[in-house]
Amino acid sequence: MMHWEQAAGGDFSKTPTGLVLANELQWKRANLLAHQVQRLGSPCTSVVNMDAQYFPELWAGGEDSGVGKHPLRFDRVLCDVPCSGDGTMRKTPYIWKSWTHRDGLALHIRQLNILNRGLDVLKVGGRL
Image 1: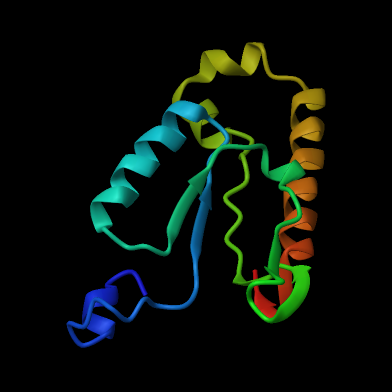
Image 2: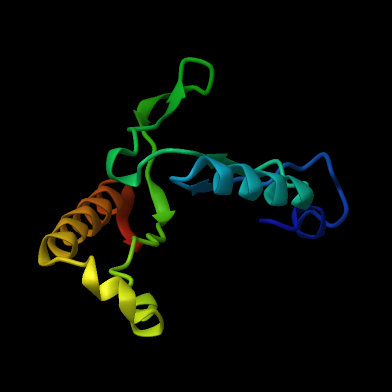
């Protein structure tokens, strides 16, 4: 899908179906990602900037499409959740002084919320 001109056999009038939607929490990284995605030239990519725990319900269809309005579900969802940073702590031991169990537990809840939201927007039989 990303190389849509090849998939269409060089016929640019055939727009591919499907969508690649990337979400990034940090706006600077989202802006950089949007710039990089734009270079691909695919009409089926989009970048959004929000907290994945609260990713909104997206709707497809409607009066113009001839199909009733229904929640948009994804075939595949990739969740790159924030990590505990234990690799960083091994490289920079002074971070251990400020780390607490509360930090780790709070991160676990955030990871779980992102996972659950990813499952919510996934089609039945989809891949997480």
